[in-house]
Image (cartoon, rainbow, N blue to C red; front, side, top):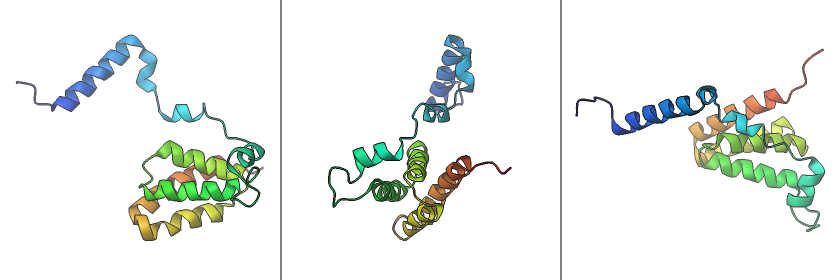
Length: 135
């Protein structure tokens, strides 16, 4: 064993070399690119599938999505794509930025400051993407 790298490091290097040989474009691949494949659902579709269309006395789509965001924050905001996608859907469902921030902030009591900070960073990044440029 003259190779000083650990086995995982060697495996990752080999996988990168193989990907480069098979498809050079994979070298610049970013998982964020997958997010563009999943469009944001229109508010009406969210209300139909996840809201109170079928259950008139149930939760609306915005409330369900706020609960989803709270759950993702509780898990440590480790699923970047899921957090960003949920924030996009919340904005489409009519949630105000303040509601999104308060939902994440409330979870600091249960999930801790690092999880809250991570979720806030992801949410603010996403909310910034959805802002209309100033004219």
